[in-house]
Length: 238
Ligand code: ZN
Image 1 (cartoon, rainbow, N blue to C red):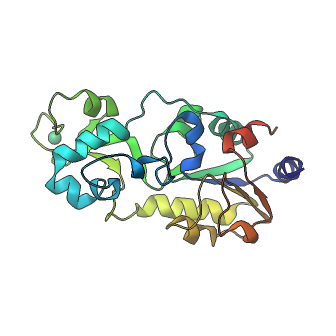
Image 2 (image 1 turned 90 degrees about the vertical axis):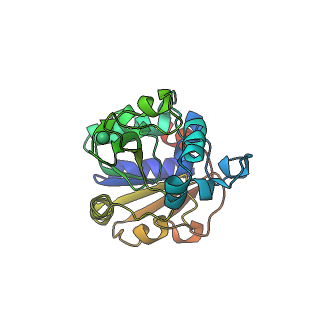
């Protein structure tokens, strides 16, 4: 019933915007950062929230990269049915943007091009001294505990750490897509955390749909709520 309603919204729409959180990638085997069995509950000397902060990256780079290599580089992960469906809609001209809180690059791997990565990407890494670009494999395979550029500069993943601000161009691109969309599908996020909650305000289209495994405080503000896995839902649509 709910799936049929969503299909109807999709059929009627010509400007879908998708806003996705961690739950979009869990079916690709990437753990949800904030879920009970996610990263926050695994054993490290420091809580992941602290390790993944800017000050920790600066002051304890060895520990940062140990954690980063262990937990943040799922380079074997493959796009799931959700990623593939969104890429298909973009090719059909029905989708005007994917706004994501994920850093795994799976939307691009599925073929999406209009992707706004609010928290950056593990696939971009830069030398902080000379700006040279490095692929994630360079960080993974570096013999040095702290991966360095040949120039001697330290390499930083282009990932938004705690204490760091979001990229203005990415945010304005996301706002632009959201404010021009006629259908907004929010998925795999609780919508309680910044910036998700704030960005939804820019939507002026007809329907907001929420697909999330668990209930969220946003449920009652949406036109349609589906408590299921994101890939399972989107993968069943045309
Ligand atoms: Zn360099």
